[in-house]
Length: 439
Length: 169
Image 1 (spheres, each protein chain N blue to C red):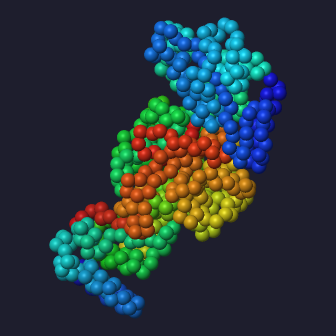
Image 2: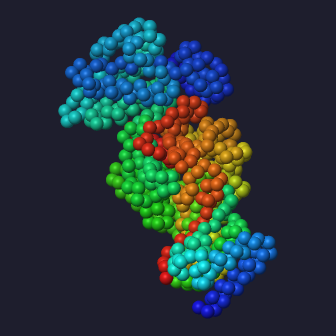
Image 3: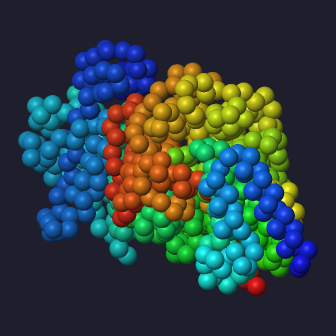
């Protein structure tokens, strides 16, 4: 156990140091410029003989496999290659038959139906080399939450085998787009992290932009034109209630919650400039953080709430700046060619993700909070608006294709720049915001 | 009313002098034919004087900006001067100046930039004697383009401040 913990810690260190070509033979993980060979895992659930067509366990196992494969760190072995069928969790697997197919990890599970459309799932994660159980757990919930259960189990496996917390049991808030490019209809929407269960929250009558989750994932703060002038609103996802966050003479925009969820930061338009304010959500008192005639916007707190990163055009072009929570000690951190905008502080505190515009191209990149170590993750006609997975290892952003028929789609990508994936949405989608872990 | 027309004529001629100084024949014609008086409007349009159509067709409802800029160039100032002349003729009319940006910027910045463009246009109209309480601004960022192609030909049309007449006389 301890040996493995150290190995995985090492793996993570290697994964995110990006300066090694070492091969980690013990885990068969090959790290080359951040591109890793995924860890094989066998997922074998006890089959439900009575419900072959609607086998809940098999459905759950497919979602787990999809989550793990989607992370780019795991390679779920095709069940057709399995030499043993798990028929009960009462006895240990035959480890030899799993080692033969070159897996080191085996996830087994069994579903039990309970009253009132509920079910129980017992699951075990095995180290087939050490012949030891790494996880033995049971979950109990209603059947209609089966996808959430799958994500929770996938997170447990991911966390146990990588040493990092997972990100599968999460939601994405975004803007669902429809209609022609010159008269786009935009709606507030949420979906599961894997694109399932999309739900439209607004009718499309009012233009809405830039939703961001509260830390407890119960509220969204966003921009709406519902009362004419664009203003910041809060939307409660469960009650579908909306309220405006203060009324201001000009536009209020670019909102984001504080890490404790008690405050929001946003920009208020003041004449030709825009400045950053913090608003306490219980007292509704507002506090000024910048005071210039420039465009100061897109504020994002560090996870410890001690610092704030934002963009300003005070140098002539948009650049990234960090200030303390009182608005003091302002220092510029972006110095590359081009302009930098939409900074978002990683939940881990290490990186700041941003949009970079240079030579007519729009890139997503990351840099350390002091501005060092800049790396571009994706580069093209138009990439914009990164958001972090709760574990700070994966980003989502939107990519807009050019021209009249063009539109935005949401993608996920590892901070390494590898494993880019399109998130399947019902139509064009932009402005993604990743929630915290839900359970 | 009469002195306002006189004022308007004198502004028009002042403009002609300024533009003539720049040596731009085309601009002089624009000013002459697009000028704010009733007779001149009738020459090129049947729009009811003082209507939003009159404003759009005979005065010019929009000004354009360079990339990431909110500075008014000569053309933009000329249009706003005509707008001011027209607004002086119809003192009960209120307008909304809608600010816009092209798609080649990020969302929050474009909102702020479009607000700035609308504000700069408002300030210029104000400097020409139009009361600020007759003008509202509305920033749209990159959300309401008028042209959709992926080239400067369209982007330059989208970087604009459009004045929209609220109440017709």
